[in-house]
Image 1 (tube, rainbow, N blue to C red):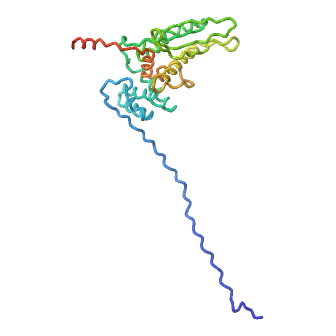
Image 2: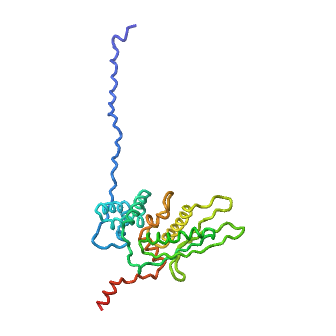
Image 3: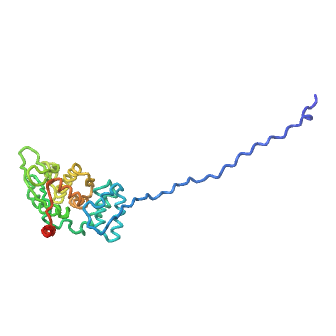
Length: 290
């Protein structure tokens, strides 16, 4: 048998096709975080005497735009206009929690420095603060009355002249202690009212200790604040004052969270027929023209 392999030598080994060399692994590119562009609120004429709703026509630009404007105006020492810009954050936009906190603190700071908005006492709007309290705490609440009158007047920048109507509710034998009721109204018969807020001031027998004076004060101011907020939610197109968070003083919030425009709207919705009296200067000018 002949060796067939001599005539048919083995074929050379096949070369394996070269595998493509992979490209070097590139690290994933992190997209650059672009700083959001904040729309600019037009300053307008800063030589005029502004109205309480100054800058409100730019509300659609949002809270960040008003904050940007307010900071610029403060840098330029235009604190009156800066305050109005801060107030628009609170009453004309939907700020997030951080924007709300910044604006409330700035509003409080500048309000303490700002001149009285309504310097003419003849144009004060009368508002009645109703307090119906348990007989047992009448003395303590009476001590708050003058303070609350001053706080409301100052918070509104003298736009309102608060009057206090304090009544008491006796505790009936066998019944739990009556709660405090608080609300605001205009003057006159059938005047509009804010919602009546009730809150307990006397603990049920054997449940807990009585409220301390600071706790009692906080309860009263918190109920007042919530009554105002509820009314503004129903009666105006403004952004209502924000709900109070833990650690926020209800007494301080009358100034930090409720803007002067809020107070203006509150007063006018409770006294729909109110018409400002002409200033003496205006009367004299009218007489001269005649």
